[in-house]
Length: 221
Image 1 (cartoon, helix red, strand yellow):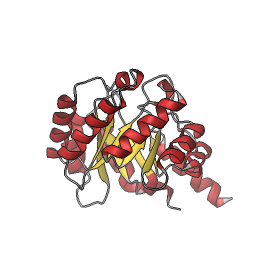
Image 2: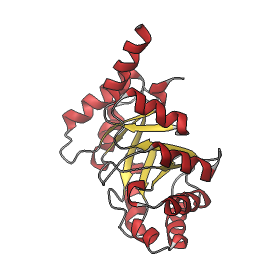
Image 3: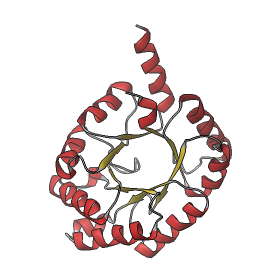
Image 4: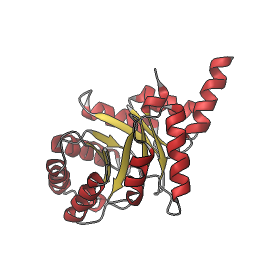
């Protein structure tokens, strides 16, 4: 297992500057992370930093509340792609979930998916900490029917992050035909590995460097 290739090295702080993005990209190159995940305004800058590498640039849409109209999310996504984004992490409309309007949840995701080039990866953020088990199941099914590539646990900006039991439930729901990204609160190697063992294919982590160093130390023992 190549852990680095399962990590989206993440910096989504409101005060993240160009200097932070340069550091993030340099760390991604050093450790060989799968992607960097950053705020939309720095997508073009990060793309330039990562030229001549295979590291993807991921960014967020409808972040962190998911409450924008779908047309706004579409324009956010298209602007990000024009700037060079390879992957879009979009927050689902959580209010629609709470209303039980999974038809609207699915329709929104489908409209975004149909707008994006096929090669662009679409991850749908469920924000599992705000959802019941039934809502996680129905949200996962809606995203899968709509053609999303991934379902993702969390923004990291709400009341909680990724939990093993949520990953297990998501995997049981979508089977092996859809990918899962665990994110939020993954700060050490054991938690990262537990997410992968539960069924995650990708990890969104801001503590990626310390986790990789922890892995190196463990391998040396």
